[in-house]
Length: 118
Image 1 (cartoon, rainbow, N blue to C red):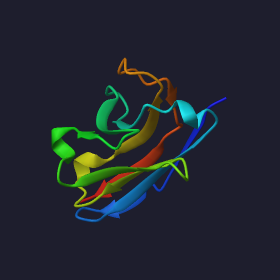
Image 2 (spheres, rainbow, N blue to C red):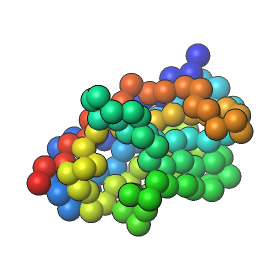
Image 3 (cartoon, one colour):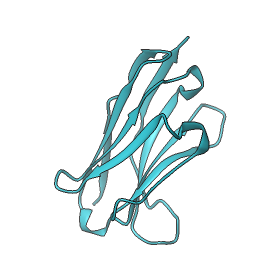
């Protein structure tokens, strides 16, 4: 059974920083790609960033140069360093695990709330 547990969310002023963590348990050997998504109530889940097992990263345009995704395979943890936060970054942030190259997230965490005040 795979479990993803996010942490690190909170309330921060605009311009501030937060680091989110997502720890994976169970079947970590099957990780192909880890992703971060975010969701605002009433909106669709939005892709934020992804990192492959080999370290290749991908970001949505709105967070490029502000957010950094990284993975520590020894700790089986993926991180999202978020800098120069904006009020529009406010959302529930969820991490996802993909076990194939199909571009589908197979497992989701429960999410962590990030609130950026202006």
